[in-house]
Image 1 (tube, rainbow, N blue to C red):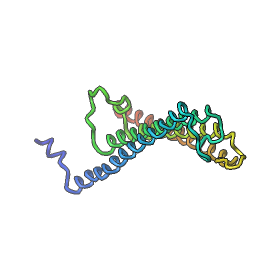
Image 2 (image 1 turned 90 degrees about the vertical axis):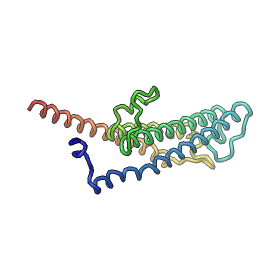
Image 3 (image 1 turned 45 degrees about the vertical axis):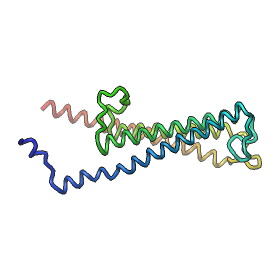
Image 4 (image 1 turned 120 degrees about the vertical axis):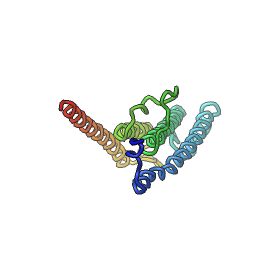
Amino acid sequence: MTQLRSTRLTPLSALIFSSRWLQLPLYLGLIVAQAIYVWQFGVELVHLVDQVFLGGHTPEGAPGSGQSAEVVIMLIVLGLIDVVMISNLLVMVIVGGYETFVSRLGLQGHPDQPEWLSHVNASVLKVKLAMAIIGISSIHLLKTFIEIGTLGTPGSRFTEAGVMWQTIIHCVFILSAIGIAWTDKLMTGTSSKREQAAAGH
């Protein structure tokens, strides 16, 4: 009974703590976005089947227009991978963010519990999101390098400056992820040293 009294929140504390539920509509909105990406994946998959089996025509100005069928198929497949990676990013934000900032999901012992969810926290989630963004950026950059054959031709989607800036931005993403991981490692090391010092006393 004493323990229950000691953990009872004041009205103000309860209000502030309950405000975390305001994030719930945000995560539900991301679930809707996930459904939209599933639809987008289906559209891209139909396009791939049409290109491979029915010899579909790529519209002028679309990715891969004016290039060989092999290049067009490769670009469509990279588009599918891009959709999947963004979908994975959404899952990490929805599940990890809800678990970290809103409420426990109670998945302990569930056979489908993600391995990374058992030790997720704000720092781990931040690093995983940074790595996912780098992966998505890599796919976009690879698509650009494949399509770069149209560089300088009429109707080309790319310019030399555009390709250069896309590469620079990708490098900035990598450096940012390294900085986040390094900062997290420093903070974790400092916390461990404090715990060891406290245990020694």
